[in-house]
Image (cartoon, rainbow over all chains, first blue to last red; front, side, top):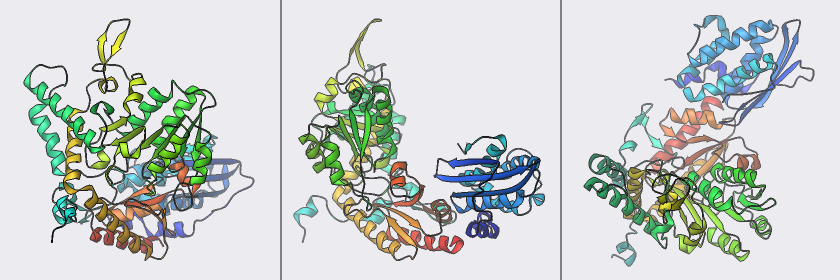
Length: 147
Length: 416
């Protein structure tokens, strides 16, 4: 395994300069994600209007993988239909765990940079935390954990 | 010229020779020589321990205390010899005081349920410390929920030492029990147990010591420490997993009801009542981990064959070397700088999360722990979510610490 597959340039960049790292005061949905194993925490803000995610941002602390995953998530979902977010949750879960439906990696764009995590089972939860949190937010739940 | 000390077996360790006893250390991980620096989580096993367990299963395996056949007698003899070995290892007054259990966690739970639970009343306090491992926190929370008692914790100072003023204040409230770790798994702090016990006893408070992180590194003499309960695990002291010891003063064990019922812990069973067996069997319901006890005794033999003072001296040298090596790296901060420390270094690296560090170090064959080390209250107190932790045993080398330092610099390059 090559460390560069895990710490892909895109991951390192998004860890150094996380996009949409801020609080949204008027979010329509807010959800918190915890990874009790390592203490990572993340708060995801979503502004949804007429079935479209108008804005999405996050705050929190965690490792490079969890920060980059959250940053990429926000970048990808802004302006997209909420329904697409649910689809993406399923696809990312498959990509990161290597289980479930076949994933069109190319269609994932920059998110494909997270594919290397699959080879590091102990780090999968770091990458999936924000996606579980997104799922919880869309379901109207306040808290998500990776346990 | 040989000195008296040499004759007592305090020659410096021959680390290269010692490493030959540990088969697992001679392997490559991710194409690099393994540097195993996660000994506070679990230690590696010398072939002497592996062979003792192997021999038991190959030659002597039988249930104990019941059979009349040769294997049963051999197994019983080996198991009770192991108890005698562990009695000497911690200088207990009697073999009756040495209970074999699954480990430190089970030992603390036994004391919580069998000793504390019948005694606690609403408003009573159990005193612990902010340094403690979850296994010396949660069993007390459970028993407090069951009885209405409360937990109070001695504060820890910024450098990882217990705040003795906070301790004096808390112990003067006369909690029903003071439960404290001998050595902090997260920071390496060695607590002044003898002093704490003296002060607790002055207020009539019994003391339980969680010795999981002490027995691999220093001589433990329960009578000299003066404590009332002492719990430790086999797997942290080069023995098997799933075996550990609760030592307690005989009068305490005599007063305590059995915790678990089953075979072996009884003298006589009728359907409406039973008579409990004598110590220590009263607390060993069911078939115990016989091979584990035998392996643990072999680990005690092994430690004493090297000499605990020689072990301590080499580990101190490793701690000093590692402290210097890590302090020399810009952006690295060591957490826990207690004056008395075991060979544990907890640290954080600017801009590199401990989890990333753990993964990147592993790619260089360096095994450390990253996380909260089952000491979440301590991490919260120190305002950290996690640290990286390198914990050394006597078989570690300065070259392995160089590998650790090199891998930290590599992590800084990747993520810094």
